[in-house]
Length: 215
Length: 129
Image 1 (cartoon, chains in turn red, blue):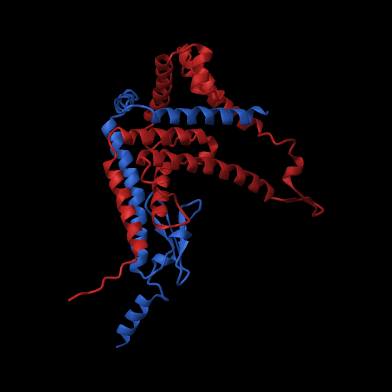
Image 2 (cartoon, rainbow over the protein chains, first blue to last red; image 1 turned 135 degrees about the vertical axis):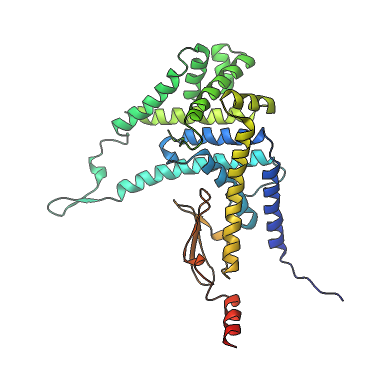
């Protein structure tokens, strides 16, 4: 007897896509996983206060979640184009998520200030913005940020090459600009960047896995 | 004082470029670096895989739970709040949210059957016989 089977093709497709994402997670290698972890870690550190206590795990999980939501939704989440390597897809997702967190942090900060009108003794409303001298941040916050930069630089005080590369990266210079400015060949540049990565990540490991990485 | 933005952006530039540099590393290099940083690569890999799987499992759990209760969730309506992801049942409007951090689910949508769903009406009819 022929029994017709009704299948919602779009639901089946999204289910298969989710199964495929789970399979890809299972198939990630011992080398690919730390790559994702380190990428997430540096991106969260780059957020500074905008990280709001989030860790590399939060960023990585958000990337997977958006991929899974993108598998079943047409307008939400992040669609994984199978022509793109899964690791590349996740790092791309993490990049845009962390950029979005940064943007939201800036918007929320501005929103909170404008949301608190104050009233004087006569009931006159004043915006806290009236007394703000400029768009610049408070001095204490400035010092915290400066301290962080100094502290990172201090970690490499005995490594002049790494310090030069570090300063250049802080200045926003790109690899080729740094290499030509300091006359570094590929090997020396890569070795200096590696020392920076290892030292910065070693510091985290001293605090255990549960440590928050926001600066 | 203009320095604040600079320090913030400088650290962001440094960290983002370090993140980017990780992607170009060979398998051998990333494993060696992980060990050099004082971590067992196998352990680190497993820890990362668990984090990824937890996110996937949480979404499956919440969808399964809501479906069992007869709620209808539109995947396009998930929105990200401070605590986690939020949505409402299309039929009864019950609220539901979850976080991947702990796998926790919240909301009245999880408390009981969707009163408006066909599934609930069938059960109600069966109970009245």
